[in-house]
Length: 569
DNA sequence: CACCATGGCGCG
DNA sequence: AAAGCGCGCCATGGTG
Image (spheres, rainbow, N blue to C red):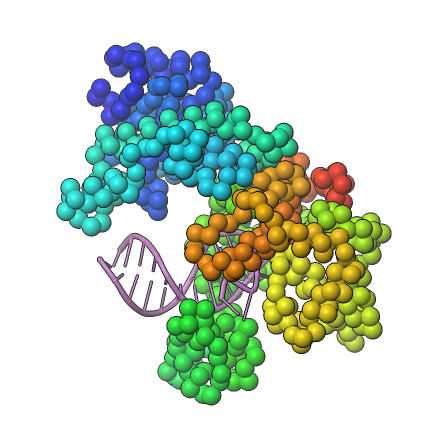
């Protein structure tokens, strides 16, 4: 057929093909979709594959010569009455959105979709790549791989650097159609492997969240150009001032090796990095040194970080946009391109509300509340129930004579250390790290740890139990399964065992918190939600957040703070 | 030029 | 020692 497409199925003519495209997807009620791009990095769409029935599929070229059927295909993808099955929808959406921007095709529908990759992940599969799932669940191997096709293209073209554009049309089409076939059948297969209704509900919530995330991605945040510009000038001058001093001394402060060398040559003792190739010059090390050069480097780094990561990228921009990933190991969201979840509070002034105010809320001590619940620790649960400060309670046990506040009304060292001890539990930190973070002598750490364990005995035994978790996945308190890491990096066995043990402690807590916040987002999705920062939701304009947000989980009370200000902080 | 590794650091 | 879990991004230097 001469429509720049590749077809598998019973149609015998172009007219018949078009007719089937107009009807079969509605009889099936679903289509599987896969996009092909120039490369992972260059997401220019070169073709789209559709599975429209169990044994019927079509690939259309998009670039360089768009198929006559492209609009028909993208209209199906945009149709909310058909289920669209994607394998890792996140990536295909980015491709289709990019195509929409450049080629005026319709945007995909985000509301009626399915994603076997996400299903497998939430069901606790450790590897949810298309190849591995096809093999393990469908006993199917696509003999065409991207790597293989590119290798053939290299030989054919006689060039080292090739892209999918150098692969023959028919091969790309075949690979794509093999993939949509697998996607379609994996979806059918995985629908029968939900371990329980709770687990499936976690998947349904992720799917329902996607349009909410898309709306946040599309809106972005208004930039305050005056703040961006004034911060740019201020930081640039500061950075250049530090850099000039360093240049005069013959080293580049952005170059850790040179920093290490000059500090060592001035008599400082520095430990090696973990690769043992260089000297460590990170903040932990440099802040302990008595050398003004160490101070200078730290000042340079902190100003340069703000300048290059959080100010410069916004110059010449009117709004700040981001994308969200939902396929993280714990069920959290990640923000990328650009990351709006790691903006330092000091530079959040660069954002302005489109209305007159930002409204935001954050959950207070959500992870410790979850630890108290999952471990059934009565001391912790009672403290939260009675509104007793958990860190103060910890402090009274670990340092009975300590005061809550210092002489200037600031948090006392013992109070801060109590916080660190409790968080160390959630993360599984070692004695050594606790010693470094708190300044408490190393030989006193085990005693304080056991004091913590006496105060919170059930939490302690839960943590110990999780550390020795024998299975390949853990569950959040909402039933989301989270695969524990496998030793793909060939770590030494005892190092890997320790890492995995810490993940088994942390994942259920982090994952449960993520589940709560996702459910909260769905409750408030009709407000002008702009950003999620793990335990925090930021809105543009007025919102009314009721007590139901503190009762997402029937047994974990998750109170939250609210804020209304013209600038987010 | 693209891509990777390394060191470092921002957030929860 | 992946000595604290989860992320993304920046500068630098090496490689092909």
